[in-house]
Length: 366
Image 1 (cartoon, rainbow, N blue to C red):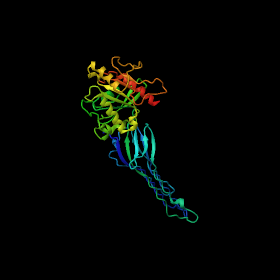
Image 2: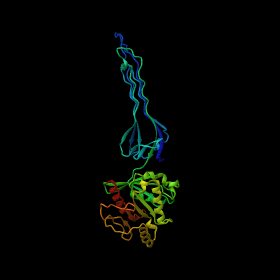
Image 3: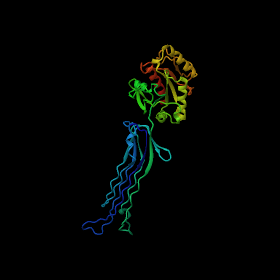
Image 4: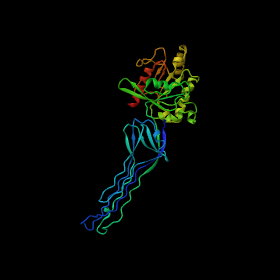
């Protein structure tokens, strides 16, 4: 089961109590105090691990505790310290204060370890309290209490490209075609119920990660459908690929406007991300209609068709690639970086799409 949000109470260990003891040996008269210190309570750590992809293993753990320190013993023996508690989370997990909503930790890199709660100090044994005027102290310190905190774990998947579209527009088919992800694919809406990640390989040494989330519908920011619930999983992406269905009963203009509005309503930052557009399912559109549909969409977006020899797009299909005359001027953020018609079923323009997306990813990384 995919779980992306859980609430927990975590506690570090309590320090062990100091010991009250006196030296008692044969032939040794009037032995002094020799009570040892208590052991330190266990710390609580968070560790990021690529082998974990969900928070489902926390569902039945309401309270996670580190071990307490052991009490001190005679002969100045210090008690054993409590073992630290390591909480393993997937990359992209945020540790949030349940009461204030403050983000306390952001675990993003594999192997990252951060101490979250300090264990309580062990109490001092009575040997620390001897003095010329108090040669027989009969008291020791109790161990300090550990820290307790109520937190919420929020998982936000880490991807380079996020797929956004209405239900059943081909997002799952595309990610299964270009990456190693194998989501469920069926001819009905809301087939995808949970986010999916896939690694898209570009040659032998380069790759990027693509995220597929459940389809978005109009009014999603008001709670309709499933997509808005999972939009946080593409909050970290710097590039969005809006998928517009050429064969849908929905108007092309309606699709792009609704999708962009819903994304912007969810997050202003996400709404201003770089984006590109894939016009899907060209394989089931009559060939004589494709040119008119795509050209009309490009004009509707206020763009002009251009040609870029760097990508091997099908010459019969119009497309748009945003070009900057001067590199110092950059690109127009309000416009898509490219528009390309594709078919995942027949692999039409899939390879050029991969390389075009990789170019955007590289710009973001640089």
